[in-house]
Length: 161
Ligand code: NI
Image (tube, rainbow, N blue to C red; front, side, top):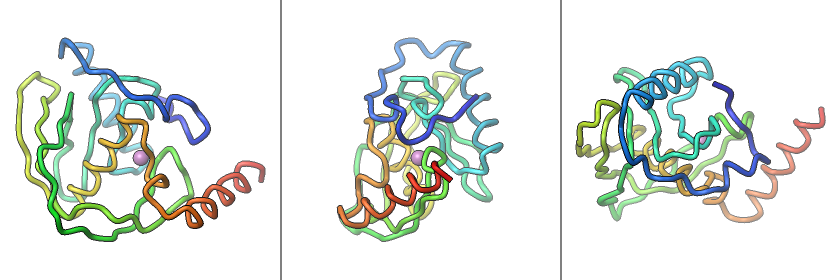
């Protein structure tokens, strides 16, 4: 699987709900986890591999890979935290992003089984980041404009180099 980067319109489109969680998506999940490991990332969403479907995979250190299909963010904490984020689609860019400290998410796994997960720390962070991808939102969109513009300039410079 090839990971698309900033500038590709797919990253800005809303992903579609998966109507039937079948064998195709079990295979997709395996491939996405492989791409995640290859990219040394902790999360990867469908649109990042050109698949405009509501699926993402995450794996934080010390945890198993987790697959989220048709996820809903049920609840987020009022408490927010600032933490440094990067993105496989924005190579070389890192910035502190403010997000809720914890999240409750409901989704289906690659076997079509529904689950609810309460997450905090890095896991909550990556779930919220990947969920954003399904909505066409990137982490740089959550930064103050001057900071975002600086990062975009940096990205353009790297691309030309
Ligand atoms: Ni990302």
